[in-house]
Image (tube, rainbow, N blue to C red; front, side, top):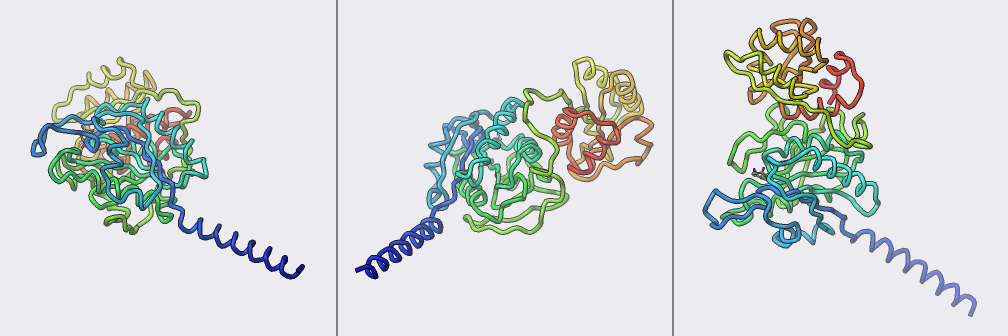
Length: 356
Ligand code: GLU
């Protein structure tokens, strides 16, 4: 009788362990989708019209429009904003970053997907890359065609983004941007075309990986600081210092610098001609902006791709300028806003641009 009882206990224990193991193996990863609007949530009155309104469709409708999404992850959605991303703001960035950090600190969340307009997606993704404090996957996605368009690509982009966020191999890659079967590092990607579905490219470093109907692989690792290795954080931050971008061109007038300083800019990124150049008069105005007002001037480029290098046609130290390396003006602005939340010398600011 005693032996039978013992056998029963052992049997029940084995059954319990097996069931537990089985439950763990089949439980789907938990992916949270944070929606912010954009064309992926846009709708038009005609399926063949390029005109539409961004940010019309709610997150529940978007999830229900993706066949098979619930088979690859346990997905749930949250509406953070519903704007065309031309209206993306620092306030929404802070709300998004705080919510992501809160969600990822929980064992119940394995990854995050953010749906976002394509216009400023690279800026939001790069901002999050610098302030999200987790190794769990964070993926932004969007679409070039509205949800009601003929051949809308949003549902497949969302399906792929969820697959990336649900996959353990996506851990520790920083924030990723995925559209059109590609996976890009937030830092390296740019919107390169106004209308094409293949708009997102990483012109200098190339894509991080690829995804095909949810099957994915990575080709390289990101090579700058992000996430847990980043010194930047949104903790206690309610706003960011004003940083403006100034587009350079032939015969550029120096009083533009003064206008931005007067408007309260603490930093100015120059989308310079070529290797971050500007007219000599503007360069002198930039030097004065630093000497008289402590305004930090970062030289980036209006060229679609390439590095902005120190001491190319003049000594940067002579004009107190910092170069952006391979960061485009929009991303150089994001980094400078965060860098200005800390006390840093010009040399330290230059290092920030090399490291991040
Ligand atoms: N301006 C819209 C946005 O960025 C359209 C671009 C898009 O999402 O494709 O939200």
